Length: 442
Image (cartoon, rainbow, N blue to C red; front, top):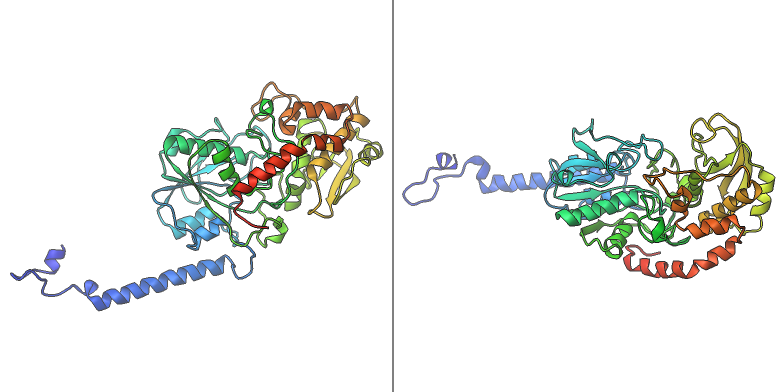
């Protein structure tokens, strides 16, 4: 076709260029393309409101060209909280900015739209109504991705909002994907996001091997103080996974920043994580899932509330008072869950008000509450029985605490401060180790 437009005489040179190939026209086309690209980037930056937010997430840095886009076809592990500052979902931005690159989606626990309420409520594979892309569930018939799923793409993008706690299962979905990527020769790119609990404090005992489950696969403390990207680096190295891994780091985030300091919108990553304050108490309050005490599901303040119909607040708070609990106030309340434990019954209990998140210790606070309830209500208090997160034999409380002997010590009334002292050295060593994977300064 080109030869028909540009017939060659015997000298071998075309007599003339078609209009679209003339140098002047080519220059004009290139200038127009550059202007269009600048206009697109400017419009995107304006859309993402980057004049005002204090940070840019990994997703936004990829969209704005601060990080080179990976080659080949992409998959995206995300859920409905994986949005940019303009509240538009990441998959929509990726399709618009990099047309034709996104081949499929993956979803973690609670489903792609975070619509599944509770543990062991599985989500099916589906087709995304917005993009038409297949969505492969990693909390369905299996929690581990299949080789067939991984044949759809070359690079897996991970953009999940974590809550900085060992038992939050998004971490283990990511770990399984790293393992699968190493096995089947795929690249993984984590688009980093803030740890809503900040990146300075760590808290709690490390997980014991005999308590490994889908709410704890690696020796992490309950509050680990790492972003999701830093966690990926830690898993890849310390877990011996060794996949081809890249992190698109945030800009502007510091380790002393909690979520409310970031200037970006909070979108609930799971149904019972409605606000950053929920995430702040979660590293401790999640322990109630292993008991017959309501953790506030079925109310507007899940995890900030706990209680039961038989709960005697004065007796419990009297026993709690022997343990220093900085940065919070425990207020007696009554609440009536509409679902979950004690649905329809009026529960007496407490609400945790975090007054200073920079010194608040969620794990210590709930351990003190848990022990007080055990001692004040020896007849009424009971452990939840299996199954829990696909474990059918071991006590859920042991899986959550991560150490069977700690549960037993709580029952006998061992002082909380003495229990903390027993894991101080292992926590110090973890704190030292995790610094090898820091991407951000304080």
